Image (tube, helix red, strand yellow):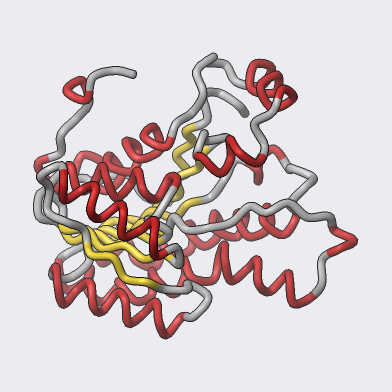
Length: 258
């Protein structure tokens, strides 16, 4: 891994109020670490309380301002709205929103019930819209902001083992385009960040077997595996003023999978 000093620092992010969903582990935890490293005022939500509190302690132990952790089940939209309001009270109006949280549990079409379908939409799509709705007035009053919605290359690949997840992540792209058009006159940028197969602990434990290793070698242009920090660094760019003319776009970080 390259030394951290080789990577960019974004002065425009200093003291910016940032809200991250699903920040307790995986890609989300890397987002929390990287935005704290940029001296942002970070708040994040997750249902995994033990892992999230350990992350707060880890970051504080590195000498950074501790992020604000707010336990929240994102299927409870009222609780999500309250968490966003609390983050704004503590850190000022949220001007960077990272709609990261999701779940890619595998399933077959014949096993999907209406209740499971609704649950997958709630976990992977619905909260992204309502988080954007909640931060919009804050961003408008602040003179603008950046919303980063997380999609997935599964939409482009058309993975056959998680159709409800693929559908939800395709919806993220449509939502991103619509909100970018609606929010643009208020100087609010809305983009989709599209990760490839990212080597979180969950992915490695559940699915990175010999067949998975062969698939990475066969599909990716680059030989290195995509890591959570690779996604976080793209998110930093999309949140910072350096990307001020970027909106309504998909930014793919997949080592050339598609």
